[in-house]
Image (cartoon, rainbow, N blue to C red; front, side, top):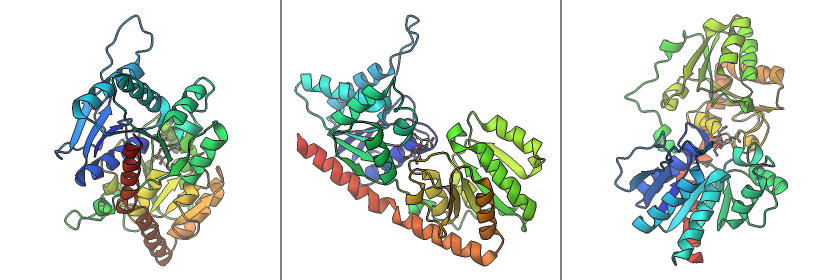
Length: 376
Ligand code: GMT
């Protein structure tokens, strides 16, 4: 099949899911066309089945806001015609599903019918899309998609609660390429670079936005390090990062917390990690928790959104109410204080990750594309 994928080309979240999905589809012989405003961060163009088309938005001083949706829908029309694309798969409702619908209409005018699959990722529904200024357009573009998927049951329920949706929503969970995550014996984990043998290594990776509750990460770690020797690795960048650095200074733990910024080597960081912290306000799925578990790292998380569908309480880690920093720290210590307990949680974390192996999830998308193509 010839599939056009529209996504945000950013670190983490929907962009990573879309990129990994496209790359695996390409490995299976499908022709994949990524259509974005810059090259997705995890995109390797070495596969002849992978193409990347940049959406250029010409700057014009008259416009206070440059019309990205217009440029995207025009690019979609051109690429569908040029490459004879069979199906559009847009990740994130805003503005991708909206632009995709416009492209469909323009193509229809020329006698070309192309199906559109929209995947909802979370923030497009729970945080941004729900805003009254966007809501009519988001509702419209979800209802006008040929097929709609969401990455968790929780996100499906939120979508049905917040919007007036007439379409069926199919839950297709996010996935992980376990073969890629498997430790390569030729590149051993250099734990000693980050911590002494007696110290536990705790990690948080995110875009450091308010929804991630970064101060909670620091406070949980503060409580942990009062009882056992430990280091905290903070990976990523975003608006809350500076405040987190200040909080570490206030708490006097600055020498135990390392801030890395954005990284393309998440697997190398996770391979050194004993425990992952994700106390988010909300998370439609929590892809990063799955990435941690695929590296045999147990997870301490909040119990909001889709997190209970990924992290299993008392098995792959623990879940607590949002903001319950004390309980999260105590649960972390339960895992970290004893080598045998830690080993059990590590094995369990990997066992859960195996349920989300890309090999199991990818055929569900392939089946969906086939059904979408048959529709016209
Ligand atoms: O985590 C973020 O804030 C980024 C965001 C995005 O829109 O890319 O991630 C969302 O999509 C991911 C992939 O489906 C999910 O794993 C994240 O849980 C979800 N984020 C939220 O719901 C806050």
